[in-house]
Structures are given as structure tokens and as C-alpha cells.
Amino acid sequence: MDRSISQGISGRYWHALADGRVQCDVCPRYCKLNEGQRGLCFVRARHNDGIVLTTYGRSSGFCIDPIEKKPLNHFLPGTPVLSFGTAGCNLTCKFCQNWDISKARVFDRLQDEASPEAIAEAAVRTGCRSVAFTYNDPVIFLEYAVDVAQACRARGIKTVAVSAGYIAPEPRVELFRHMDAANIDLKGFTEGFYRNLCTGRLAPVLETLEYVTHATDVWLEITTLLIPGENDSVAEIEAESRWVMEHLGPDVPLHFTAFHPDWKMTDKPPTPPATLRRARTIAMEAGIRYVYTGNIHDPAGQTTYCHGCRTALIGRDWYELGAWTLSAEGRCRACGTPCAGVFDAGHGDWGRRRQAVSVEAL
Ligand code: SF4
Image 1 (cartoon, rainbow, N blue to C red):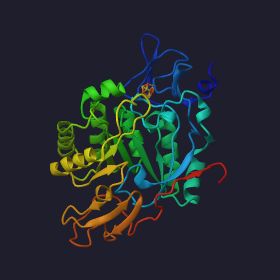
Image 2 (cartoon, rainbow, N blue to C red):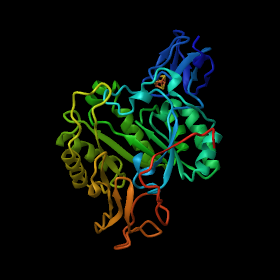
Image 3 (cartoon, rainbow, N blue to C red):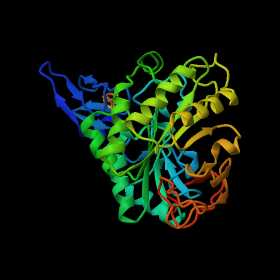
Image 4 (cartoon, rainbow, N blue to C red):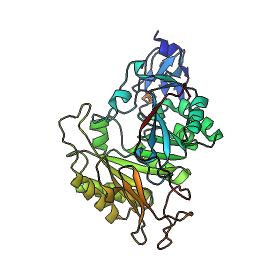
């Protein structure tokens, strides 16, 4: 027996099937497992007639990033966020931009043993306002993410889920109850894209976006990585923008980010900046108020503008903040229109730094 399975902690959301297998009910894959077998995500496995999580307390390392890198542009701008992930993933995206972590099949990728309390304490001591579950998807390490989130909230630290939103209805309620903000990928806007490039489905992701927007207090932003020839047509961007407007409303920020050839998709070129700017224009014309470009140098596409008078509210050059014309109440100082988001009276000054942190050493 693999030691990481026999030492795994009991997982939630599963049930026994009549044929003797056990079904994991965490994500819409609903893996049906025999004893000792792992799910597609690799980190949940059947052990002793239940499901265990094999990565509890084990991280791929900790870094302090600017919150804008998650990306979140309307959640405590300019502040540092303590970021970590574990290993594995429940989607199989051919264009994965974090494949060294998400595809990890050996646990020597996992460096730091970190208890929820140690992580929350590290965030306090390093001056971070929040902790982000990122690099891979917290859906698959839900029990660990929830315990870390509870430890963080007990110390006044906020929590951020960076996720593909590929989660079943019941665990969805639990995961997002413990989050303060989320950036959820909307990887494409056709079932064919999800089926062919991610071996997943679009519909559960849309359900998650609607659930988070309408049934929780979680601050939500959306990211779509535009891949040339795959999901960047005018028709697809228009359809996505219309759906966001109709189902989520105009105040959910949308980020169009640049693809770089990686993992199993090295035959596509990087996304041209013009494609990202065109997508931003389409989404804004559809009525979405806050639309951004990402992974390219584009100060105009990364600045937050007042949707009432177009004043630059939060200027950005990469992750450096410039103009700040928001009042203490989060309104435009020029015309008084409120800006959607979670803001303090001022902004943080973390800048573009990325700093590795050893949690045990703190
Ligand atoms: S979380 Fe993992 S084991 Fe559970 S259904 Fe999804 S891929 Fe399968």
C-alpha cells in the first residue's frame, strides 16, 4: 500500500455503491474507486472503504504575491497575499500553465508540512491580508482548505480560492462558505472546449459561478485564458459576455489573460495583445463594467475605471498601483458612483514583488 494513501486523512463527500466500489462526490467526475485506487485528481483515494485526502498539510511551497496576481483587482488592491497549493488537479487541461504542480504524481514536489494554524500565523507575521489557495485547485483538497480558512478567519486573515469551479453542489456550499474572495476560471464558452481540452463539462462551472454570485457573500472575479484558435472568436467572447451579463450582472470583473505555449499545447502561439484588447472591448460593449487584460503589459487594460464617468479609479502598471481616486467608502471621488468590490480607505503597497516564505521557519 502506498504510504501517502494509508496516511491520508478521512475525506468528506463519498458514498458506497451497490457493486462494492466507493464513489467520490466532490467533483462532477464522480470517480468510482476500488480499494487502493486513486481518483483522476490523484490526491483523493479509496482506503478502508472510504475516501482519504493524501495531501492534507502538505504544500507545494509558499509565496507572497500581490493580490492582483490571482488575479483579483477589486479585493483589497495592492495588498500581499500568502499563496500556496498542493498537488494534483481534477481537470486535465492540455494548456495547463501550472502543470509542474497540477500534474505532480510524486510527492517530492511537496516541500512544506504546514498545519492550518502555522499558515494563518505566517500570514499574520508577514503582514499578509489574505491567504490564497492557488497554483492548483482547492476543490480537490477541500478539507485542508476549509481548516486553513477557519484558522485564518480566527486571526482576521481573509481567504481566497483560485479555482476552476469544477465542484459538485454539496461540497460547493461548504468550500465557498469559508472563502472571502474567489477567482474562478471560465476556460472557454463551449461544451466542446471543456470536453476536448479539459475532459470536463462547462455546465457545472456555470452553476458554480451563479451559486457564488447569488448565494454567497464571496467577492468573485472571473478569468478566461484566451488561446488562439480555440476560444478567442468574436462569437464566443460575445456569447460569454452576454451570459455573464444575464446571469451574473455587470459588476463581476472579467479578466482576459494571455496564453503561453505550455504542457501539451506547444503548437499554439502566445495570445496576441490585440486579441485580448478586442475581447475586452466586446465584453465592455456587452455591458460588463470592469474588464481587464492580463499577462501582457497594458496599463490601460489593467486600470480600474469608474463606470459612471470613466475616471481612472485604480491605476495599474503590471502590479504597481498608481492613481487612487476611490473615497473611503469605495466611491469615485469625481462623480460619487460606487465601485463594486472590497476596499479599505487606501491601498496596499506590496508592488510586484514575489517572495518565497518558509512557513515552518517563522
Ligand atoms: S475530487 Fe478527485 S477523486 Fe473526487 S471525483 Fe473529482 S477527480 Fe475524482
